[in-house]
Length: 200
Ligand code: SF4
Image (cartoon, rainbow, N blue to C red; front, top):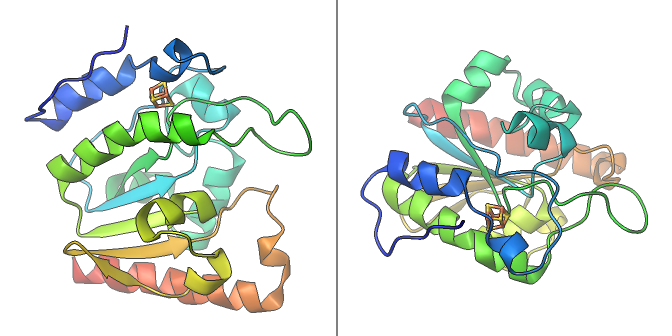
């Protein structure tokens, strides 16, 4: 049963309610996992992806599958450093299942995204991260508005007292990195992430 308070004073209390959220199921959407939870232990930065994959849904922890391995390779971080650095959240928190057509997983509907944004807003309110790293186009648009990845990867944006640095999605389903110019954009973006982390 979904519980949403009108006010949260601690991340622990917020995470307790995220972990049992069933708002999308209650609204009639098919989900194939319980919410993926990110343990919080004082991470400096907030990583914001699209939605968990099947492995993350099974383990209920973020970035456990192949895309997570790619992301850590890009960032040149092992698991320990990665999870110590980033509190990981996403546009939606439950595995949405396979896409009915084509490759990859189902993109959460706008209504599911809206239902889940409640948790993001409270996380940002409570954690006030100085750095947000978005992963993939959908996640970037939730912070930066209707931008294309090509226009924003390799840039940094100051927003509400924090820095936002977009990355592309590391999923094998994305062909965005096939273009050499986009690989250069990714390299620039990764340098920005490390530069911002060094300043924290
Ligand atoms: S995707 Fe988000 S809003 Fe929907 S059930 Fe999972 S945690 Fe709740």
